[in-house]
Amino acid sequence: GAVVSQHPSRVICKSGTSVKIECRSLDFQATTMFWYRQFPKQSLMLMATSNEGSKATYEQGVEKDKFLINHASLTLSTLTVTSAHPEDSSFYICSARRQLLGTEAFFGQGTRLTVV
Amino acid sequence: EDKVVQSPLSLVVHEGDTVTLNCSYEVTNFRSLLWYKQEKKAPTFLFMLTSSGIEKKSGRLSSILDKKELFSILNITATQTGDSAIYLCAVVVDNAGNMLTFGGGTRLMVKP
Image (cartoon, rainbow over all chains, first blue to last red; front, side, top):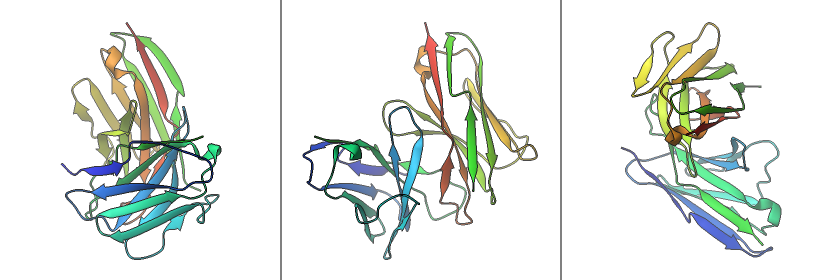
């Protein structure tokens, strides 16, 4: 089956630094990928839609200058958390679907970010 | 605004019990409904439902969709401790079939 790989699975960084998270579709091309954030004991919250070759579409309340998304190829989207603060600590998950309608979304393994 | 609501928020049962998880939705452009199980990391896919009244089954899990009443249920029979997880319901709301709107999840705990 289709696989979406996310890296790193866990990262600890200092306040003020930036962290990049990668999401790759391993055996299919994804013109669109999605980035979610999950707080403890809560559901997934869509942050942004990553579009290959164009700007990402951010959900209301998500700072695009803070969460930089780049989707430079059909198999790779990156999320960079810039100038991280402790409140950015969370679980970030990407997902992608195949081109054809009617297939389930595949999720990456998720990245647990801790900002100290 | 599209809305997906799951109930109950949490549930504690004993092994062998049967549980029913609910997912109701109000969306402008329904395409399909998906169920996921999330343990410690990323969600894993369970079912995708597009047609009303057709039950999908996988082992002890089954699910059905009612497009008239705008809800779906996920049944788990003979529960086991390994069924303990968060169960997420998501609705596909765009024509391209890409965007998921998630419900809040149901946290299930199965005690021995």
